[in-house]
Image (cartoon, rainbow, N blue to C red; front, side, top):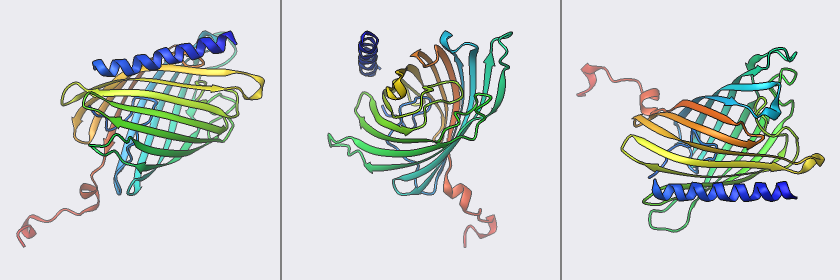
Length: 288
């Protein structure tokens, strides 16, 4: 009971810190590098691509696992107005202690498929927040023997709230993982069962090209007779190269089953269908 109260107190304090930081810190078009998702979906007929390298130093309790380096690829497609489908797959490298008898490994992790539906859009003069739901399934394509995959099929339902103010944009997530666990490689909660997940993030544009934000994300399970929890704080942002391209960066710190320390560096690219689907008009016909 004491450890549960300590976790609850720490989560509340860090969540309050995230909100207060936003007051001191306008809008976010994409949530990478944050774990808390936003309510936006890819426009119909557009493709959105994200790549991120996530390097983590693990908790001492994870020994002989010392480090994990994940290259994560995400492809999103606007299927209908307000609905996107996406797939992501990680390539994972796990560094283990020398002499432990557990070799370091590299390979494909578990593939994830999801549908994201924006049910309620934000109105500029309304107090009502945007509301989006996501349903996802992750399949055990990674090797469980090498710790690259969990060996389980995961099913997740997540709800997303978003509200934009003049000073910041806030995002809140609340969801449940009905089956499986939250493992990506050796990072996450290992016990399978019903896992409660939640997150809060705030982001602000500090210039025309630079956006900074703070994210707090956690998970907890009580199934299987064992209590496991994860709590991670992320500070980072995006640097805008063009209207459709950003450089994404962050540093993280974590408690319980989250990595002790991490660095994230990635890119996000949104396609313009007119540039991809339409054939260019020959110069001699442009005046026809």
